[in-house]
Figure 1 (cartoon, helix red, strand yellow):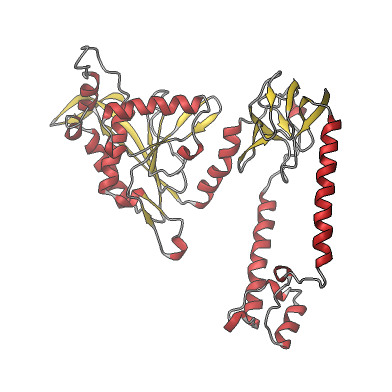
Figure 2 (figure 1 turned 135 degrees about the vertical axis):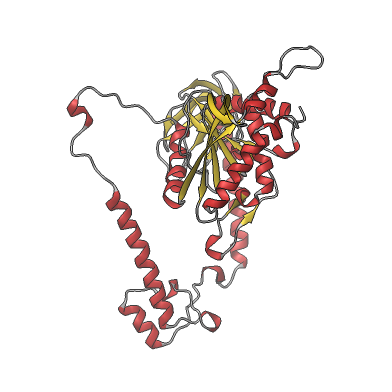
Length: 419
């Protein structure tokens, strides 16, 4: 038996990529192409396979390790190489003979047309203009017949390239550096940012930077809804049903989305004057996990009753906390709900989960003295904060949406639920 080192192969331009799964253990017998570990970059997850058959002698890597090309994964015990070399030599000799036979039949070199660069059509004057500006005319898209390039095309190309350079320069100038190190003022500790927070940061920056947020704050009277919710019992056992208020809020939000379809839209193609109206109702739920905030989607909320929604909420939350959620379940939402009701607080400004156009923030309900039916009485009030994309939703539309949502959460809705 001989020992073979299995190392991380070429994984592109990535460095210090995190290992999220170790798929083998010491003593395990492997076959060629069996997966060894799973690594995850900002863009994708990749399984790294074994290049050899054999038995694992020692494992050199753990979940959470950062790896780069050439890092040792494990040591593999393989069979004697002498027979394998002899077989490989015979195969090589056979292939070499085939190549020589084919080569002898070829009398003239062939031209690979796919490697021939197509010459851009342009007049000598336009070519001179491009040279003076330092432009490779073959990179310019022509607007005339058969892609012929004119001076306007050159100017547009230069203008676009200048805008891109200016944007890159502005991004670099925006970065603020600290004059002093934190350690100069006392003891510090450096920790790795959780992977989920690191991945979500760029999406949050994109949403906050590119979407003009407006937040509408209001309160919903959920007195009757809470009385109804706390009175629910199992028809077989007679025991009280524990159903989270969030299940009712999802049902109420879905009803409002049906009435106001613009809130169930995306405007990825706003520059082309287009908007996408979604005919499905997949509600995103912000789940607080030890690794950071995750937003799985509760699919087809319009076709589910309160009990089923409550059960699926528990399942989705557990999958997120255990990092077992499928990545696809974090995409394709209609609108997101982020609730602080279990922790505390009232109003806040939730950040829209792009490419959605609105998000509902829910605070902790509390009993208040409210002027109701001609007198001050104690009612249970729920703080709600609706952030919306002002490019597509006006303030009046947001106010109407909130009013409809409040009605759905009130007694007009609470006693009509199918549980």
